[in-house]
Image (cartoon, rainbow, N blue to C red):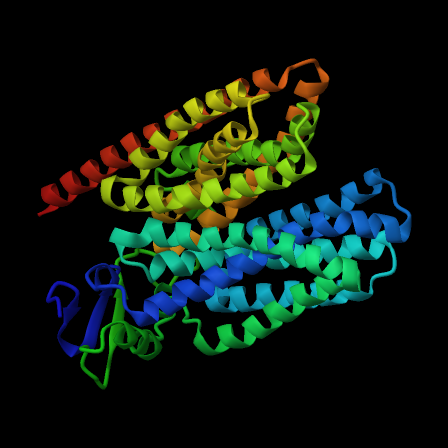
Length: 458
């Protein structure tokens, strides 16, 4: 037991206590539960895309009629990220995760019986709010219960669950829709999170920092003993946070105040640029490959390769962020991604195996970067503002996700070739790399200034 993190009388100090312990079964279980939440998030997000043709045929809708339904979930996500997620300070991360999962489970269940596009639009809007409420707290809990040396890796790991949910939605929809209709996919998408809600209520821990700020020391100390069984049983335990926010409510101004404004704005810009690249690629890749003469089977495999590339690179970037520095590792990925996108521009029209390798590398850059910047946000913000910081970064980033496909569509409609499009994507990738590198320089300078100030005070 480390003398630097525990003191007499049963006092435990955060975050040193977590950082000085090895990751055990309790923390692993917490990360697994958070990963399952992200898996269902990805499943729900992607399933509607596979259901769309069947819904359109059933109700006699035009393709344009489905646009508002797709957008409704994105609007709901932004509401959840920006307005609901910050409520974790008042109610705790666990309650936000439970409430968010339960909300999107019930609205997905309600979607089984919708009779027209207006009803489905409302359900998708509320579903998005639930997803947006749960995700930032899920990321915050994962980061808080992870030692610093593996924090980025664990955040990336749970976000891989989101990508796996994408893949699972494809197979489940392909299996269920022909035999049982599109409503059966909603039913599965509702029953799974309802079951998970029960498990979360039973096993998901509350934030230690939240419990400490609310002076619920006995509950916080009990969780600390699950992490370290050698902690003694004491009559008056106390869990202390290094945060100056002890006992006060966290507001958005604390995400942009205290010298954080420039860093937060730049981080938001990276989120928006990366999501613009990601959704622009996801939306237009099938059209581009079709125009290049590739078969429908190649399109399906290509979609999977993008996801697989993003998952595979997480096993490299996560440990690199933890061991070599989050800012340097992520900026390197973005800069290397410029080369991957150049390779993609040269691979169009090439044999299928060459194309798939190029798409895999593109997925490493674009999809992997999107996951990694979320891990960066979890490292960038301290625990007491992490949910609000991550939630707002995700919410502002969605603006890029909305306008990205529009920009790509305008480029292609304006006569840009597919090769020119992929070469152009290297520009925002380079900008993201430069911004992340600059954020790292700012973080180092700020850390040195704080150390100098502490030394002067002594």
